[in-house]
Image 1: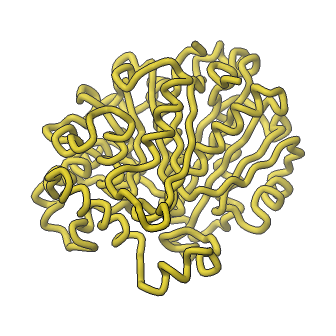
Image 2 (image 1 turned 30 degrees about the vertical axis):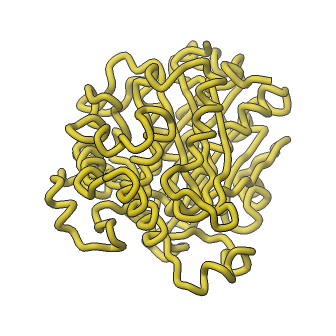
Length: 391
């Protein structure tokens, strides 16, 4: 059963703050939930499905549904790190298409800047089956991504300057976002001159660490059309999800799960990469963006470095305008989980509500992609194709 045109994102909200010491994690979840529902023109009483991930406190969906005053028919706590929320939207659309629910709420909140879980998330990694093989040797998130970056450089001749182009594009967009954590425009030289974190990744190749959150509301087609004639909806046309593992040590560090999730999403939507007007690409590090662009088919494998050069990612007229809010590299990476903000900015673009300086003209088709986990080991990947129309 295809989900194409069966559901739409009718509400979206991003918390405006990047440092939130005065609120609990549950309170941030509630604020973004209320914001997304108000944006949709709906109430908590309209929600019959609730989705959250490992960032939610207590028993996850069970605790949060009670706290939010919900009576859901469906609850889902799928946990794939930062990509969880794109998994959730796809699952919500499938459940709506099957008639199991009609209005799904998806929330994210995190407070790593003011005392919450730090980079790497809040999961029980110490007891994971891979811990004894990996944690003992001091693997960290930055050095695992650096392994992927160095391998890509070895295989394809990718350069640090090419990776820096991704940060430069993000910074050019962030200057127009008053809520962005980093608003200064940077140059390639400034990225390369920033301190080395894990060779070959510099500090400015890395995402920001922020408090914050976001939420989206997914509704069935009938409800979506009743809310302003569907003008404010981002119709879900295609969804793909997958995982990439270490393959018992035989891992290829030069590609991501987007190879499979992207292909599935494009096939379901009946479109190709050439049709996409705007792309929200998960940007935990610059290398994440470069590999994902290749794996989604926007260029050939190994050509990512050349593709992102010379302003290709800069909105509104680049070859592939991306992350026009500044992305995780400059704007917001709430709770070290950037997938939710990727969905939200894609919806803004489809509505024509992005900042005028970065709004893509006639943005009728957008892509949002999430990468969760660790690019150097195991990841969960999810891709959404969203449109202004249901078909």
